Amino acid sequence: MIVKIAVVTLLIAVLSGGRTTPRAMAQTDTPQATPPSAETPPSAETPPPPGESVDSGPPPDPLAPFNEKVFWLNLKLDDYVLRPTASAYNKVASDGVKRGVNRFFRNLGVVERFANNLFQVKIREAGQEVGRFVINTTVGGVGFFDVASTWLGWEESDEDFGQTLGKYGVSSGPYLMLPFFGPSTIRDTVGLAVDSALNPMNYLLSSTEVLLIKTGIAAGTVVNYRAMHMDLFADVDRYTVDLYGAVQDAYLQQREKEVQQ
Image 1 (tube, rainbow, N blue to C red):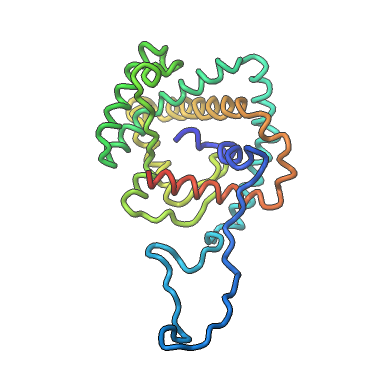
Image 2 (image 1 turned 60 degrees about the vertical axis):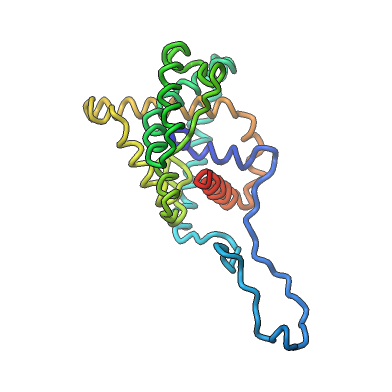
């Protein structure tokens, strides 16, 4: 998904509402000792429910030293590059224009969404993605307006290859913070590469043209999205006690929810 390309996306989800998502903490309450009896042997323990681990603490993060450095690098890029650019853009683009631009960029991701809906055997959703693209590209002014949703109720089915792998039981692997792209996992990073390879422009244009177009799309998407959420970063410093952990938790929880849908 193109919107994932910057850490901004996940930070907004964490900081909206003026609070962060705390890490899950292991239970520390110790039950009182119970005298041995025939019904309850002293060594008996209640097994965890199926699919749940005994340890409910924070997820393992073997790449944390690398991830934390990249995380703060991404924040600095937001401070010195992305936020000033989005602020300047905000002065010339109305809210309606920014929403239309966001829809335009979303419309360009039809191939990845169509393919991954097929991979997950979501035939109806795959068909709707094709229909949405045709209608929104023609009647909707190259995607500036989402008339397929407004008129026909055809909502976007946002699937990517990372979700597809998750659907088929592939573990997410270690959490990974990517430079410029933001939060990810090993599985989602592989998915990002596959989704990029699915784009037909890779096989119709030269490598230089593809690089320029993809860079332009990525930059336009992130700047536009950042401009739509300028105020949510105003007080970021007061939430930096465990900002890295909060973003990690928000990302992993959201991705798990998306895989389960």
